[in-house]
Length: 110
Image (cartoon, rainbow, N blue to C red; front, side, top):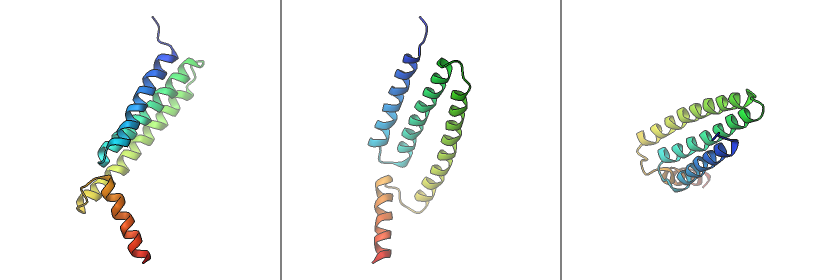
């Protein structure tokens, strides 16, 4: 039995759905970031699979490499934001950070 592109698409869609579920259900920033990483990994699997089964093109691997670099940069920036949030005392998660930012903006306008 050989692996076809359909097998990789099923694997990628499962990983994408798990990442999307993780993004929607988590309240803390670390959980949301883990979901974003899963979504990006699912996209990378798709790129490599389509590149391999579409004439052994290198473009799929190059796009996957860009996705990995993007994910690393996103993780570094997001981790810095999370550390800054926790060091200021906002440790209730993403909901608290969004509400705090909205209240600050509203107070500056008034």
